Length: 228
Length: 228
Image (cartoon, one colour):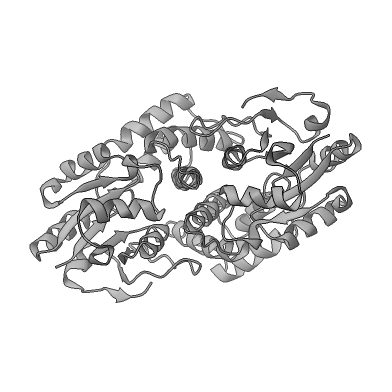
């Protein structure tokens, strides 16, 4: 039996409503991707100096910058702080992707353990799992907020090794983000890439051990392939 | 007299033509921002593991992923590899922002030294400076390509300290990116934020020593303010 460690943002949660909030203010919904990439970029930049901030604090900062840059060409409907407030509120009420509840239930029904490890807060993940009705399926809800670095710094994965009292080789990190799996592999974990969209793997990053297109493919191995 | 260390991508070079290449294939030019943020995100992710790749290699990987993600809703005109090739070619022929040539000349005319420190290659910066006709104004063209980490890891700024034989406190990092100045400050350099667009400073990052809205404001101090 394996212990699966699931990433949370985008791996479990569906960020589409964030684009909806932006669109409701006349901004392109695609800005949500730029915002999220910028948020991770600067969280990693601060982690390089062992000085990572709270996820939502940086999320607010980055959204202000992204909205400002976009406003160079067009106008936002409503003021920036209202939009920032609405996005943060939407972040607190996100739902999971359709494959998540059956996928997690299939893993635990097969006798595997499931935990989570997020760059976001424990509180935020607890809310997401409770809304989805799968909090009881999950052994431990873990976050980098206890330490000074975010994933993919090796120390972030050490949190899971320590808290779950399981050697790294006994854990399988599951994520949609290649950078997360690359970091987990460096830290000695097994890795499974949840590639819902059929995105190409970035060649500069360590390949995942396994690729699935839905979380439901993990338990039965159907549709799972080796490598990226 | 001070020694100014200038960042290169976006600080000197104008990336607007990249958006133009994307637009010529029917993709939104704003994808260039998502691409660049993703490129830095994953460069930093690999730097957390002291395994940073060549800038252009990762640039290609990230562009493929960004174009794929966008294609979910619309179609690219032409195949992805052609677009990637055109973007890389455009990267090799970029020009500098209008304030760069007069700004650099004003600094050296006032007796200051000017060098560059980039996450990109020396070759790429040399080409940019030569096309702009200011290569002779620049003391040293430095790149993180000699080491295993990108800026903003402290070791990247140590390259400038070592190569310029100047203590960190005698160098002033100049950049458009807050993360670069935050990292330079941690490494002990003075910092000047080139904020051409009036973007708000991200509160989670160490504030810059000085803010200017054009490189030409650095030499005479006109328009420069303390802090962000």
